[in-house]
Length: 325
Image (cartoon, rainbow, N blue to C red):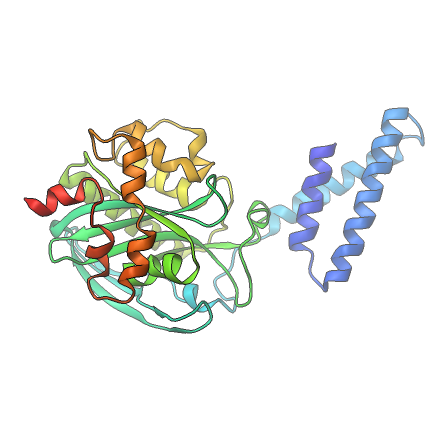
């Protein structure tokens, strides 16, 4: 009963329409009734009506939950206003619309730029796991950055599609509060805004052990996700459809035997999970990978330098060896 009561409380808090005082009254009424029902059931008093009414509310809220549908037509925040579109893909060359290339001055002051880009997947050379921490060691945002032979980088990031004026809530993500979007962006936008503007702590790890076809397959998986989200919206879920679990699901398409692990949920430890899978730079202990992979200070020092992507990778294990070849 406690779990059910808390679930209804969350649904009312994050989905009940109207002003805040309406939600407040509804939460107090439901909380009081749930407590009364629990006491009545425990003491076998007041007949069966409290339990029956409690069950009826659960059924009604369950139906409400099922009827909630994601949308594409809200007033979105600038940084998620456009959907990534796959204009064309022939198996080798891809044309993407709405690649984000913002210039960030502050969180509120930014130059909006959505651009069309073309990429030759036969020129893919690398993939990096990027982890950005903003609320302690257990929670991080996960991004994947692909490098091409011409020096360009393209970063994919699964994010909440927040409305204008809205902010992220981990609890809200359990109650279908947010839609999900896939952002493709330049590193000078999506990495720099986290390290230099939002003050997050950012780490970069070179992914190793993938063949050219596997590297290409991971990129193509993101193309497939972009097409799905462009065709039909989906809800973000803090546990099952977040930035880390999506990376896992996409990676499973090229390596079906990937094991489940608690670190898929406690996303701050996802890099250690990747180390245990053997896909980070071999022969280097994780403490060194993490210390040398911390790009926060290098990103802040690089600022808006056109060589941002190269500068943040100085000293990252696995990168310097490739550069020397």
